[in-house]
Image (cartoon, rainbow, N blue to C red; front, top):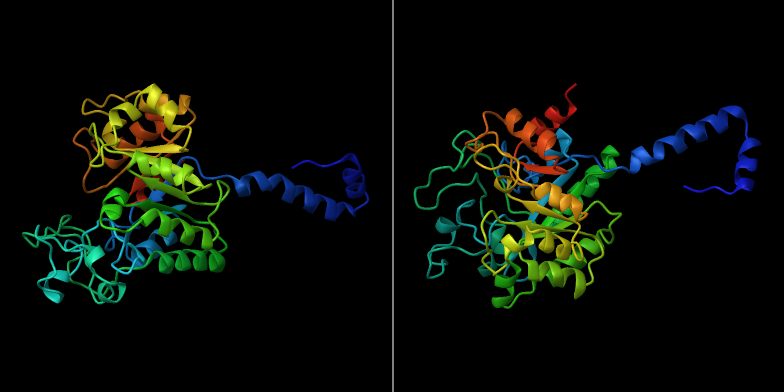
Amino acid sequence: MTFHVSAFGALRCLPLFTFMRFLALLLTLPLMAAEPSPMVIAHRGASGYLPEHTLEAKAMAYAMGAPYLEQDVVLTKDDVPVVLHDIHVDTISDVASRFPGRARDDGRYYALDFTLAELKQLRVTERFNAKTGKPVFPNRFPLGRSHFQIPTLEEELQMIQGLNQSTGRKVGIYPEIKQPAWHRLEGHDISRIVLPILQKYGYNSRDDLCYVQCFEYAEVKRIRQELGWQGRLIMLMGGGGKGSDGTDFDYLRSPQGLAELKQVADGIGPAISSIVDNNRQVTDLVAKAHAAGLKVHPYTLRVDELPKFATSADDLMELLFNQAKVDGLFTDFPDVVLRWLERD
């Protein structure tokens, strides 16, 4: 904040108490505007405790103090963005019993084949194996208990912004554009639909608390260059060499690729395995990304599914935060990471 000399002269005429209060407020402004570093991103909400991507899981993550909440976004048949981790709905709902015969030839049930009204009829539950019916994480929220629904993107944004108003906090969002190339092959342009909704709710620039993320490099470039997104943008990176759309992750992890990526993106979201290898050795990816001017937000810390090299969640966080120096972390257990970061 810049003041002219005349402005300071006017301030000196204020009563001492008023001037001191103003000065105290001025000194706190940078702290109020600063983003937490490292930051915690609630992966699908507090999904270690409640079914992923439900409004209840997001509300719990919010209450735990997570500064950012993630939204994976796919489209319905009638082009409504809904919050789901996959383009399928058969591993998190009762779609097979409620709409028998609606699977495609591959046996999967796709969100894109259902209208919003139909998806709202589904009973959402903890993630399970569609073939065996068994939960993926046995010790998490029990299958078939309580009642949860698939939320629309707008419903979730309204809830988060409502909580921001009622609590006075400023919690951000972290939406992912899911499989845009596949959506376009199906005749639906997901990015062109989602970005205006984000703008409608006030997410327009890099000053707003929003990171848009995507695994497809062609789409990341399109979002920035063709669709004109001015907000923060993250290039997600799979742990392997190439993505399903042909994105060359090996190249993007190189110094040349990271420098190229910096022209359109603000950071990368790599797998934890790209940060720390199976021998507990920290790779040079974070250092290379930082040298290119990119933030690094790896995924995903799960207390109940740690990498084989990690002896505990604390051990993994020590490697990621203190040794690798990552800027943030996706986690199913935001309370665990927040406690670790806040320890003395």
